[in-house]
Length: 410
Image 1 (tube, rainbow, N blue to C red):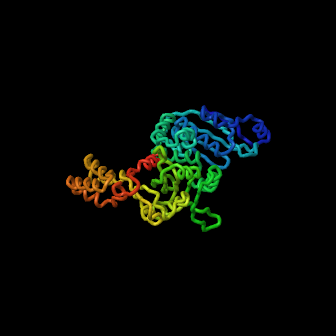
Image 2 (image 1 turned 135 degrees about the vertical axis):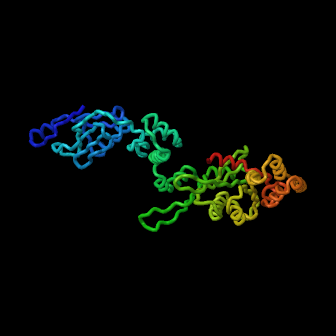
């Protein structure tokens, strides 16, 4: 049914009549529950009218589009041969930027459902499902597509679902780049709430006064954790690193130790640009200073997974401390070429040998059973790094505490 609102402005009497008419202010919240246009609706701006058309198309599944879009007139219509259209324009007598809906033909005929609606954008999806994504920040793209299909009978691509989730998370958490600007405030708050905390921030200086410095590294050793390790933990420190994912990937370096209950006790952590000797040297230098480890000390034992550059950094900074390797990590490399339960048991028998004689005997047994596996063990790092028979202090050869920490990180 087509309805019109008189918009002839040739006489002052008609202008007065238009001013005196009771226009209805457009309410988007109400419209989202009941998407219906009415003659006399007043839109506060052109953008508001366009947004109403977008929402109408999505909510009703109709393939409508903007047909006329200029400074004073707006017209939307459905695809031919459907007769549906709406027309809105400015009312000069109102002397403002409002658009009034003057003509409406609210009849849809001969138009099919828009299964792939061009009005369905990633921004619209992000705003619409922000609350749901807030409750589940890792909401699968498959679930987003399913919800959109059930609610709006509209098909979206997997890529669009991913981008919508990313935008929603950005709206919730804020831009990652903007959050890096608060790293100094974060450090100050940690030091205020945790006395004796060590924070070290590294960044590349800016080339231009208007540019922000570029973040590169962040080291944190909380005072209570530092004091707790020195007062109640054994002098065993496990070192590990893992990748950080996101807009700015890097490496997370961690140092933990076994507590009196054989649980794990976090000591320090750092975010760096990559895992290499320079980064480990920087991290260990700060850790040694925090724990007050003397350079000539041989009291501490470090356990690792043979990370890149870590062995040489430890050798330079603490040449007299023992550096042990995680046998579980060695076995994962071993089984790639030598799988099987028997070979696994023989490798662990060697790794757990408590005397040199037992170590040699287990090694000879492996040589008789599998020459290639024996050759692999001989090419492995020196046994003093992973077998207690060749160690003078620490008999721990399985880095389970560090594994638990990595599991919590992920």
